[in-house]
Length: 237
Ligand code: FPP
Image (cartoon, rainbow, N blue to C red):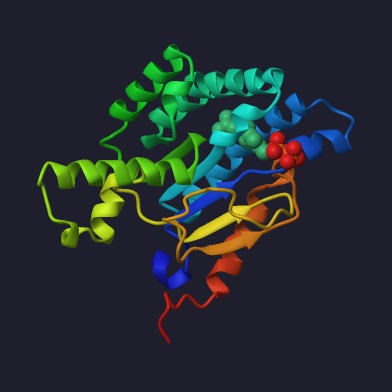
């Protein structure tokens, strides 16, 4: 059976929420929650690939997350740095294409270099793709896209009447990535929180009360099964 017959989503986007509450409930520091969260990322990517998902986007750090206490931001940055060296190296070996969306320039220069290198080195892999949203905010991305389009118009590359969905997609940081079919948000919160606002227009939303550090491969299977039972009409009858 093909993926379509089994109703496996091509692209799943995760809002990994609840690390802090998971830790608090156990009397642990928030750091422990984030560390455990990073381990869950490994499990989820492995399972997603196994069942035939082609693209996974992970909302790891929002443009608003910079406003958290400095100690927590520093801990998250060091976790991402570790992830960029160890985990990403492993993903490269597994021929996973890695892409970063968001304002990477806000991170230390060694991390920016690593992100650029990894993107380039994995750009020819096409079996499985991981998109890491770091310092990402959909409104910022849309504003940047509007500026690019405005410049193209001023440069007379095309006319205002030629602006269409494809041109907007091209101007976004997610260009070339299929729209997400399914969004999974953990921890019981039921909102989109400035994540992929344009790209999620027809995505199925799945909310689970499970905190991200407790989310496992069975929970992922359950979410995919629930997706398979949804009737996607894309505005049609
Ligand atoms: C939300 O939980 C989670 C984050 C802001 C960070 C996400 C990071 C990870 C899952 C770990 C590292 C990921 C990678 C890719 C290495 P929260 O802190 O908002 O939890 P709370 O709402 O319970 O406080």
